Length: 343
Image (tube, rainbow, N blue to C red; front, side, top):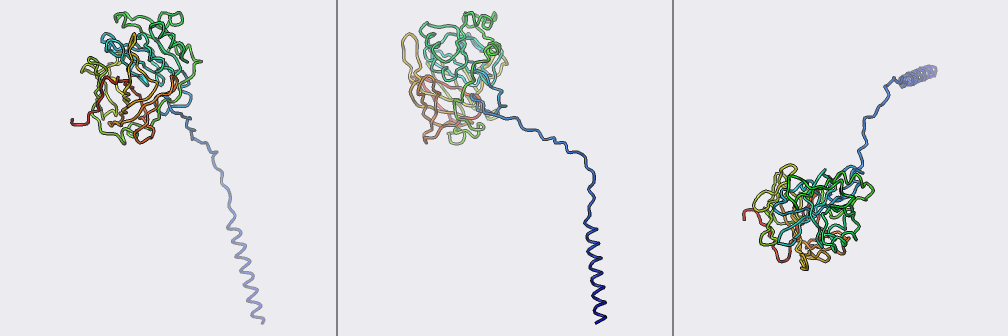
């Protein structure tokens, strides 16, 4: 018994010593460390550019859209500022020629032109954008129609535009009215920004036409017997390039050929009174060309202030590619064809 007691005592002592050593081993001395300085930068908030579908810094486009009636007579070319547009509408006017309603918002150039007079369809084109429209007068009834839209009318020859519109000496009248757009916009910062007009995919390759449409090498349009613009697909830039009279259609500001991420062709009725009027309140056949493809669709516009909607044959909204758009208002008496590669 004495031996067992002694052994037990030794075991207790060893256990106590081991526990004491373990306790001592878990004691950690905290070392000094430098203060933490974060280098993380909070990304700037973004939103979608309403007339291009591109991602931009939030607040960077909190200003009005600027529009203009742009001349497309042979003597007016090359025009100034069209390469910076978000959206361009091409419409038939008298004499079988065309004019443009051009819209700038993502980038507003210092100058654009030549600016010409309005026509009866222009109020229906301009009204959904709000903002400002420059034009060089027009028949009184057409001016009255435009002044009844929610758009600021910047008319050549009026006191409020005297410091912002002039006749360029290097062009011949009447094809020489130039507007100083960015200065005028800065003086009217209280006018609201436009709202989203179309549905957009992230890029041209993700658009409805690129994913579901027929491969397209070129687009041939006829507004009349003498006005037949065309577009050719340029895979390198993922855009369609514009041609008129068999020549590249260029911009006077940089000499570059005009190009579009999206070419939207609407077949439209044109009525005749004093001048041709494109009828835009209603619906009709459309083709949307993006990313080297073309898809058939139906266009509709419910009212003067409503945007144009594009619905595919599957009943789903057509998504454009993020980027600029040309809208070709081709008369029913004209023609349109999407030419496949190799044709």
